[in-house]
Length: 338
Image 1: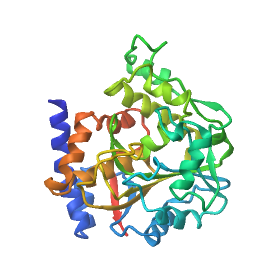
Image 2 (image 1 turned 30 degrees about the horizontal axis):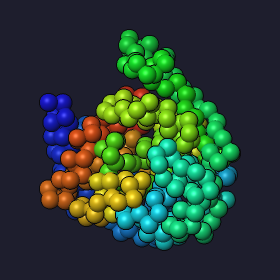
Image 3 (image 1 turned 45 degrees about the horizontal axis):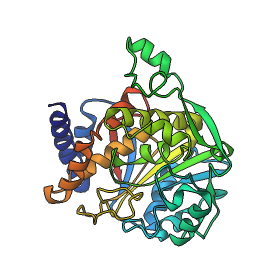
């Protein structure tokens, strides 16, 4: 029943607000999305998926990007069928001074599990135009999940304690050691489905993507393959540690193109059934992932059906709920069409 209610809420607000925005009536969209609330995060949007649009959006969200910049993206399995065109990455990176693309090794069986073969995959997929830092190549660093115990104490409850977890969810997360050498983080995300999370947005990109292959990803997954809210909540908590670490020096771009129900970690991902939608940018991780889901839900049924089914069958909307619970951002946003 809860899932059906969430779906109805998303469909109603998404279709009305984003339909109005697409038609250029930003005031109507604003009225629907705000739902009477005054404080909204800005999410910049363009239907033009090009380097020029990326640069235009980036210029609106990069005020906190200073110093040595890490660009976190998903470089994908070798010859992945639904990867973003390399030009969309190359053209943006070249315009960001002192920037490096960053990745971490993976936990699942893949050429990307070991640093040496991971580097070969990067070359195969075209990442030879700038430095690429595999951040856990030389080990891990630990980031605290700030305020978690205090937060739950204040709520009067503690999270579930699975038998295979010593304690409760995460109080810390192991990330690639080199993450700590960067001053700012641009989270550049190919928004798509995900086998366990329902969808992979900015949250998944940093939570799973910055966690070290041998330790951090196992902290999120646990022993075995836990599904449902446990995995999602651990993922959100890991993301919180990273957003807290960078503070105002983190920003987000989601590219809604080649939107398969499968992640780029699937070397045999199915062909997208949803049309390309556009590019989103924001300094608010909750707002940009919520807006991305809303845009998908606002598509005609024959386009949104498969991804909606993937999201809801995995309880993926809980990512949005739990980010809101942990005060990681604002789910009330203004969609600003550029």
